[in-house]
Image (cartoon, rainbow over all chains, first blue to last red; front, side):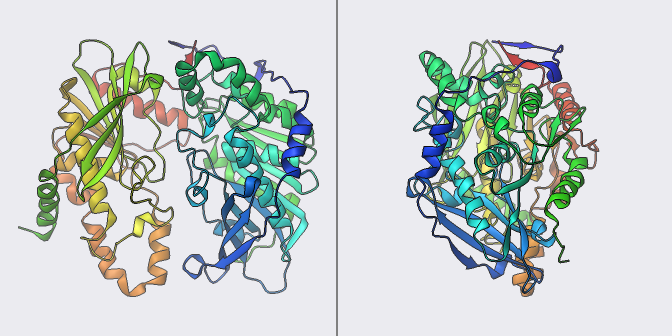
Length: 314
Length: 257
C-alpha cells in the first residue's frame, strides 16, 4: 500500500539506528582479515591522454576476491600527488577519473565486487546487491564491498607517487555513504571527504520513506520473506552510515536534495548531525537525487582542493 | 531506396524472421494488490535472448502503457512504483546489460564504440532491434489501450517511436552521454572518423524524426531542464501523464505505509 505525504519535515525528522554491541569488533575483525592486496597496474594507452596516464588496477580484497579499478595519474615527472578515491553509485559503473587527475589528484575509481569488472567471483546482480545475504551480518554482500573500498585507500596510500597524508574520498549516493564509512574505518588515511545524497544511512527507516530503488529492494524482499524483518533490521545496523558517522574525525562536505526520493533527505540530515569532525552541509530545494549537482560540483571540488592542495596539470 | 531506408528495413526484416517466443514469469516479490510483475524473456535478432520487466495494473483495463527503453549503462532498474500504479509498464534490457548479458556482457566504457567502424557491425544495430522487439511485445499486450501507449528513454525512444509508429507519445531525455567514448576512440583511430560519422548517421534521431507520428517531448529542445531534478521530473511526469490521461504523481511524496 502507498500514501502520499506532503507534510514531511526532513531537517527535523528523528532517525535512530541501534548500534550493535560488537559493532567496533566486527569491523576490526573484518579489516584484520584482509589479505595482502598485491596490487598490479597495467597501463592503458587507449584511455590515457597527454596529461593523464590511466591504468587498469587490480588488487586482492576480502575473502581473496580480485577487485578492479581505474587509476589515473597526472603526467608530471618527479611530483608527489594528493590521492583521491572515487566510488560509484549503486547502479553505476566507475568512471575513468581523468578529470580528477587533470586537477592534480592521483585517483582510484574503484569497482567493488559485483560491479562489471569485479564480478567474476561475486555477482549479486542488480537489483540484488542490497539484499544479498542480508539476513546475516556476517555474510551480507556489503561486507566485502565495504572492504573493497577500504583496500582501495590502502593501495593508494602505498603508491610512491602519492602523498599518504593528503588522501580524500569523493562520491555521491552509494559513493557518499562509502565516503562516511571510509573516513570512519581509516581515520589515519582519509583527510577529508565530499558526500552527496548519502545512501546506506538510516537504511531501515529509508524503506519506510520511499518507494524508489534501491531501498525498494528491501520492501520487495520483505514481501517474499515477511518473517525476516527483525533479522534484516539487526543485520543492516552493522552497515549503516549512522553508526559510522560518530567515528569520523576529518572534515566533510555533505550535500542533499530536499526532494530526494532515492535517499530520503531525512536520512541525510540525520547522518550529518551524527558526523564527527568539522562539517559543512548544503541543501538544494527542488532537487532529488542529483542533490544540486549542477551547482555543487564546483563547491565540492573547492572543498577537496582546500584540504588536499592539488596542482592541476592542464 | 536510400541506404538509410535499406538499412532499417533490413533490421525489420531480420526481426520479423525471428519469433519473439515470450516467456513470462510472475514475480510475487515485485507484485502488490495494485499490480502484478513479471520477468520477461524475448528473442531478438542474432538470435539473442533479451530481458524485460513487465508490470500489469490490477483491474479490467485496458490500461495506458509505457515502454521504457534502456538507459546507457549496465543496469536498468525495474519501473518505478508510481508508474506501475498508473500504467502497464515494460522496461527493456538490451543485449549486454544486466539480465541480458549472456553470452555478451557490455563494457562501460566501451559499448558506445563497439563495432562502430561499420553500420552492420555496430552493436547499436542489435540494440535498436531489441527495443523494437520490446515495442512489439508491449503494443500487442491485450491489457494495453492502443490509443494510449508511450515510449520513454534517450535517443532509443525516438528511434523506437519512428520505427514502430503506433505510439501516442514519446518522451526523450536527449542523447546518451557517450561523446567522451567516441572522442577516445577517434583519438586512437583518427583514420576512422569518416566511417564513424557514417555509422552514427543511421542512428541520428533527426533523420528518423519524419517517421514519428507520436506527440514528442525532447529534453533540450521542447523542454529545458532547470537542473532541479525533482522539479524537472515533475514536469516530465506531468507531460506524459497528460498524454496518457492519468494524474501526475511525485516520487518524493509517494511513501510506503
